[in-house]
Length: 196
Image (cartoon, rainbow, N blue to C red):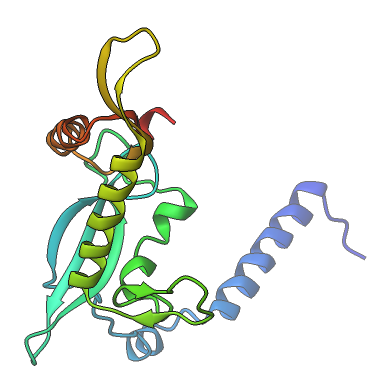
């Protein structure tokens, strides 16, 4: 019986493990080259557009990849975080990561729906109908709740029956113009999602 030192046992064990590991992985170059999967990136040659996540007030930057199909329609391929953004540095929260579903979900509404008072069903209506209805409702609520003088007799000219909340994806200019419009209508209850 041959005596082995502890060092020799460790050497033989390491060598045996290496041989078994390499043979199990199949390090045959010819086989590896033959089974290489040729892949093409889905976003190869796609147009990249920059956008902002619409969900919260953080303002994470998005990259949207689109491609024009043969029939002239534009297909949205992917939305991901913008690594060049100082806000999110390419990362997105779970809601932001699902931003593509806003555009491609089968459950997304493709147009306005309206349910008349007392009706049980929603029906498709035109944008003209919706905008006219919205304008009439704003006018009626403003007329009903407009206050010209406060309790002390001071002229205030304000509408206390309507509030407005701005969206987090508003730019500074959009927020400024929207605030001017709402103040022009006499609204005093204005809020911005960035402060909520």
